[in-house]
Image (cartoon, rainbow, N blue to C red; front, side, top):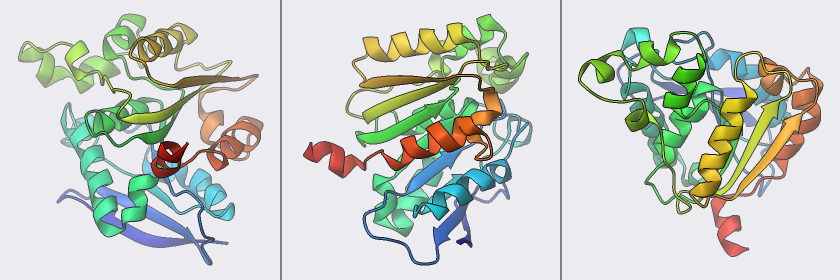
Length: 249
């Protein structure tokens, strides 16, 4: 049985919070998990949508943190939402150092914010990206999310910036392992974008493992009632290691 411990605030906005979940009797040496939701930066989805996944992980013994951040229409336009994700990770680490070794999970556009927060940290994190949208130039060219990329980058583009400048470029020092999970019938993120991003990460020397879930759609990956999540994502997360364990291997 899981317990919502409460919410950790990391900024003045009501959006700037982390929802914390924990088993009633946390077992030893079970890796904590941090989840970052998608929604194309405009909050088509919110942290609450990941509560079923958080509870499913808690039932398997994990402590779970679900990051909420400002949407593009309420102060979260680039780079603010990425700064929020970075600040949330810092706040978790200050609360309890165990969170610094958590498995980091980003879904859809949440993967972009997560990699932005991780880039340049040297954290050596175990990262799992579910249907990720991280290369904003390619996403815009592909029409992913309709006008979502342009909406998110409005101020940045108006000031002469480019989508490439808002796309994270993590280094091997930042990422100990990178698992990319793709839904075979993803209606939101085309396979072409996923393959392009994987190619970029491999070229940067990141340790990439890719998994395609047969028959799955975009939101199936974060819905524990769906086989894509129950049979693939949850066992995969249970098998990830902390950054300290990765260093020891």
